[in-house]
Image (tube, rainbow, N blue to C red; front, side, top):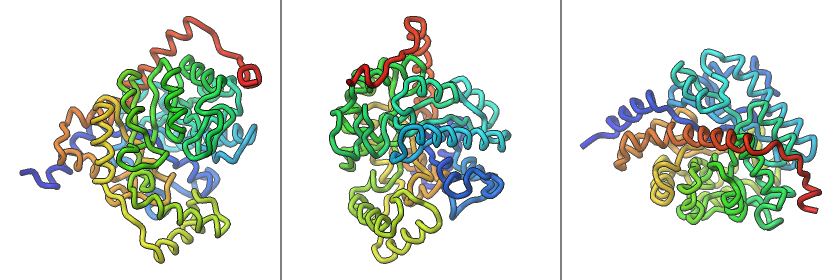
Length: 398
């Protein structure tokens, strides 16, 4: 019988050849909040434990081979303010890559990801989190793609004019006509349609329209934890026909039923102190820590995440699952997955559950790379058929 030590050794060996492609990390926003992108004041070449979930030594220890850096901006930002802030986030990622060229490689394609892996560098891609970042403009969408953004999450926590969020009231009932056109234009450019954060109605509408594989950059299974941010089984069942990938997240309030109500109370406590519930500055973390001391937090574990992956594999199939931790985008993390160094613990847990090395290679590396490559192939075909769409929301939605 193999021991946990054996499984951890197996995990590290697998990650050496098939490292993790993580679908979502909010380090850029954390650097914006902490030091306004002044990387000399927060050098991730050194250990940033206690301040950040992410730094280069821990990315290396965790076996990360590719990272989609989120160029997220908060959804209360609107119009050109949201566009400008997104551009600042993109610039922040570019500064990060330029500062650490021995470790981070710019990546725009599946081929770039494979090249970076061969060089022993971490492929660095970008994903925009929320359609508010394009201010209802398909030209702005194309501009973000030209700047290197390779997925866009259709919404964040609030509805936008053309798409419903999972955590807002019903608006347009999924995607509006303009929302469907956004999906079509994303397919044509080669930008992955990310369905994390969106309402189930939006997921279904996007799957009905998209002719390219979609992603869920950081979402888990609703059947295991009944939270609106997670993916219903009927949607997971549609992924094989679409070719996409659902990347399980580690955020405790999305994966552990007991954490859902606790986090709601913690968020209300933050708001009572005049702070945004997603604020993770030192001041905000002191408020969180005081609340946790008085109200012990239900703790998710590596096993909790593995339960979601077991279910997602059963419903969607091994070819359609991945990992999207959401590090530096959550105040709390599971035991054993405290930061980006924790991925080997998850892979070891899956080895202990009987997952094969070939299955785990799909989970960590192959599925995500295949999905991006397929989106690129679809885009080449569509670009041969039609030019850019110049439709406006006023024309399509009235």
